[in-house]
Length: 599
Image (cartoon, rainbow, N blue to C red; front, side, top):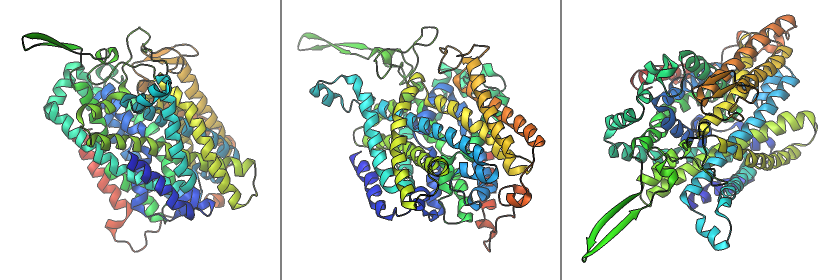
């Protein structure tokens, strides 16, 4: 772990001398090769939300979680590389909100910039929360706090602040370039740390078939894969084919990969258009193997027998010896290696609406590491986790400082300052983003699966935004007023749906139902999928209606921004197998094979 901290900070200090302009700091100079950006593209998403959240979802929802890849990720990554990246990169926009200004107008840009800034702060806070929970579970600072006479409950806050300082330092020094190189380092750490975990875990439960047998004894619905989505009662998520295909595959999946500046910024750092188009496609190849690395630990965690307090009696020298192995109450009340949830600040058990203990699914993957790895390789596994947390934080913070500086500060506060001034603003925006993220980390305490939390945020921000992008890029009749009013309408539809619905066994409030409970969903995730559908549909309909009543931009101003008015990207003299389209066809074939045999 110490070696990893030295490397990440060292990268920041090494790159500091190259950060001479705002373009160097915010856009990595648009000079990086495709393979570097491709690994960063996938690693920007490979934060705590994926490593911990997908493991938690695997333990909570079973193999249904694999659809986040086969339906919710790979198709969208192919689409953004082939169809949308030419618009992003060719427009020379420095951010996604700035692209919206070019396509529509300033008010649409400002609205998206504000909502995106809020989303990145929440996402970064979720990573901080996950890291603090891990450090608590390891009892790393218990001895220090006991010696100093400080309450152990402070460790949670101390861990959040510590992680924030480290990320702040290397982003403050090296900007986006520092984040990208650290994301590549993290990618290899994740594979090195989690591949042995999956192999050892499978061996301990009798292989793939042994795991399926153990999981089936807990809840057979967790193994129903495709046939389990035909009816909500046949899968733990409580979703149907509409919720899965429309909510996850089309709206949330495409809304994230096609519009989220967190990942788009890594592709826009490429050295040319061809490389930018290849970045999401390069990322999609390793993305296909990650269900095996991040979902299976969660399934394995609940497949193992739940620990209980035991007493053994033995005879030694004529004396009867009683040895008691005491297991904490939250472990005994859990399932497998997934404990019951305890509030990390107050130390009190957390209960659902019916008074039953909530399971802390976020601890599935960390507890797998602690259970199976001996000293040494445990350090590697835990460092991989820490790397994913910090990478997720860094990606969100770099996206935040870019959007704040270019789309809010430069546009509405100080338009004609020097480049040096904007570079300084970007660095201080990094500090502000970190401080806001610390505050939002505490909101994640109320969920027992951070993936539920994240998809809730995406359903408010990315889902309506995807409708705006689809219409803007593929329908030249879309107007700025239509896009602006549609975005507001979509977000309000998400808010209204969330306020009128509630997952089963959840308390009204942050989970929903804060207006009135008109409908209950089987799970938080099912509610998220339908919140996204409502947000997307409301935006789509309202944008079309308002656009038909207004006057669109002249076609000359839409060249390079609308598909029908933009020349096809020049592939030069590259042979057919080196073109992005050839790679996309290969990915589609592999995706079909994986959906048949695993997803």
